[in-house]
Structure formats: structure tokens, C-alpha cells
Length: 215
Image 1: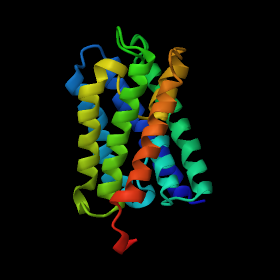
Image 2: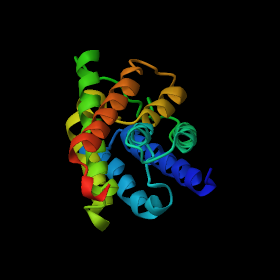
Image 3: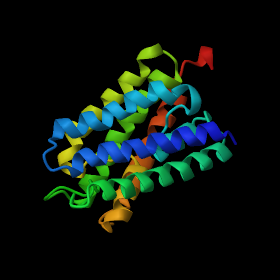
Image 4: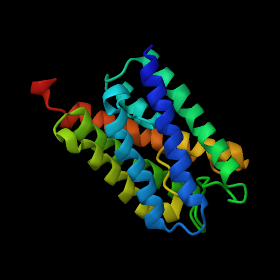
């Protein structure tokens, strides 16, 4: 197992939680600020670590790439372990620097949003995110603009889904703040929704959108 890949995934996921959830935890941060904080982390680390690990920094993305045959199971398990550990440590450090930040940006349903609605939001938005990853970075069609496209997709997803579910799209993004804040409300849908959305995007890419001539 490549240690460099694991280190890159750990640091990238740590940064996503520390900065993304941190922006949400700071009460002055508005929706646009939160969306940009998450998206800019993706853009930054896509270019910093993309050549090392692919910058998944999301267990749902790793699952999709596993389904599509872009990563082996042993490597995927390693990625999942360090992604969740990075997410947890990111939340721990966030708690240390923002002790009065309330829920630490934990992903919870908005007022009046049902579990079914939340599940659909997480599923659909994760599908869009992973769809962008496949058709830019994995396909190679977007060249050096892939990282920007992926980061912007996360921004638009949070702009829409933030008020509804806080737009996790990422089980590691959810688990870290949930553990540190002790708030596990509806946590299952933040695992199931992104996983299903990611798998659907992988199946669409492999079965329909992938350029068979270059396979």
C-alpha cells in the first residue's frame, strides 16, 4: 500500500473538515462563505495532491471509483480508514480552536426537512459531484481544469443543499463532527445517500458515458 497516497488522503480530508466545517461552525459565515470554503479546499488539494492519491478525500468517491474499477479493494480500504481518521482529527482540532462553536458544523437536517427529503438531497447532490469527477478527472477530458470543475460542483451543491441537509455528500465530513459534538441525528442518511448517489454515478459512467475507444 502506498504510504504517500494515504498521507495525502488523510491531510486532504482533515483540511476539508477543519476548513469546511469550521466555516459553518463560525456563526458569521454565510452560505456562500461555507460553500466556497468547501469548494476551495477541493480545488486546492486537487492540484496539490491529485497526482499522488487522486484527491478523493471522500469515502463515497472512493466507493464510486472502486465500482468503476479505477482503484483496487485493498487501496480503497486504506483510503477509507485514513479519510475517516482525517475527518475525526479535523473535528477534534476544530473543537480545540473553536471551543464555543456549538455543533462544530455537524451535518443535520434543516427545519421541516424530513429524512426522506434529506436522503434524496444527499443522494442527488453526491451523484452530481461524482458524475463531475468521472467526466473530468477520470476521463481526462477536462485536463488541468478538472480540479476547478469538481470544486465548483461542490460549491453549487452546498448552495442548494446547505439549508436542507448542510450538504455533506461525504460520510467522513459527517462522521468527524458528529463524534466530537456527540450529535448523531439522522446520521444514517449521510452514509446511505452519498453511497447510493456515488454508485449510480459510477454505473452511469461505466455503462453509458465512458469513452469505450479509450478504455
